[in-house]
Image (cartoon, rainbow, N blue to C red; front, top):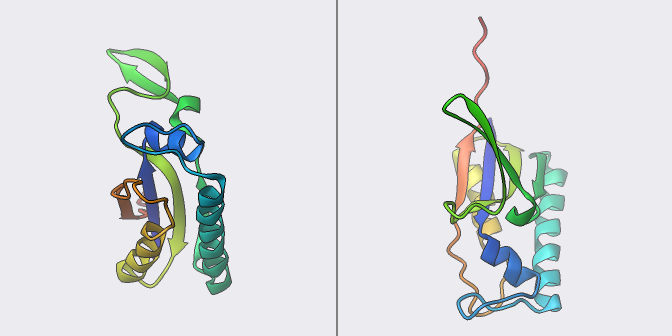
Length: 136
């Protein structure tokens, strides 16, 4: 069965990883970013080798995003980041695994990605089955 494993973050997380920290979220050092990227690359390589990885990507920060929405019959286009949204999709994997327990193992590994001391690591990772359109 296919599952979407979605990692979330915030603009502040992206800023810290880019070296622009705050008092709440300290800036990452280049070697800390390198360790995290290498960890994620290793995880992806393992999923590819096992045949479980369907696809996945990390996403750029919300400052580069755009939202399209229908409001009162009119299309509204908003550039990011979105003040009303604390968490945004940071990256995702689509995996084809035996069940939700295996998808949870993969999400657990993603949650253990290296981060510098003091970095808030409480951003949730969501697991959702990929639905198939009903045939008519």
